[in-house]
Image 1 (cartoon, one colour):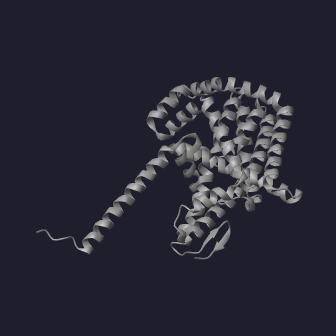
Image 2 (cartoon, one colour):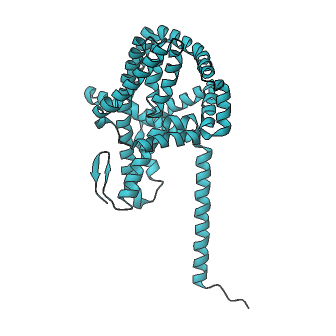
Image 3 (cartoon, one colour):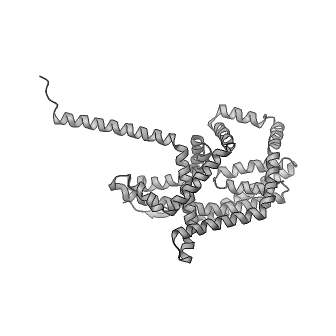
Length: 353
């Protein structure tokens, strides 16, 4: 008769089944995250919006002695008032310059490409798509930008998601913390708080930098004689949201539009853009050091590019703030809590736990 399995054999089999289950579960989780990457990125965009709304509402709540819902409502009205006033006073001129800009850009690009004997822009994008992942990213950005309905739906999802998150952020944070084992819940909660503070600092610094870069670019390009300088300044300011890569991308239309004039205008436009970026890097950023989060430039660059290649335009747009969250998580959960090393978190030395 066959012998009954021993307790040690049963325990070994159970451990094997448990390990297999864990591996399968982790694989399924990774596959689910990959399949839902666009939704998760939109969720992260909602988190950024909620942090921005909370940053505006908090001072209003403190000074006016009102609750969070009233503070958020007042913050929303303030944002709408600023946008409405800007659109009322500057909207017609901006709309006219934008129409002129987008009607001139294709001709200017093809003209410059023909002068340099590198083929048309469409051919370059086609070759880039076949040759490299970056070319594929460019094609995906163009395809995504032409899907107006999809872009509008994404904006609305981020908007309403951000409002709901801002109304009761503790509800969602506490729910996320409960998904991890009790032994690490305090560390995860502290990491989420640090990440939120880091994103709040980064957003505050970026908004100020975007305003300064946009205004200076518009004035500088106007003085250099570049057409549609106001529209180009707006593009430069918005592109500043994506550090490192954004200013490079924003410089392309400015140089193309300047090339429709003469080479002196092109050189002046390049000089204006270089000076503004030098001022931003060496003056504005140091002045905002307390409001911003320091990440090594190479890390930020490759994080933005990698996220863009993996997840397209949303990854490119949100790559840097995602890198900030990952940086905080690695510093606290791995370097500090796992390795037991001393590390700075948000500019303050953190001792091993």
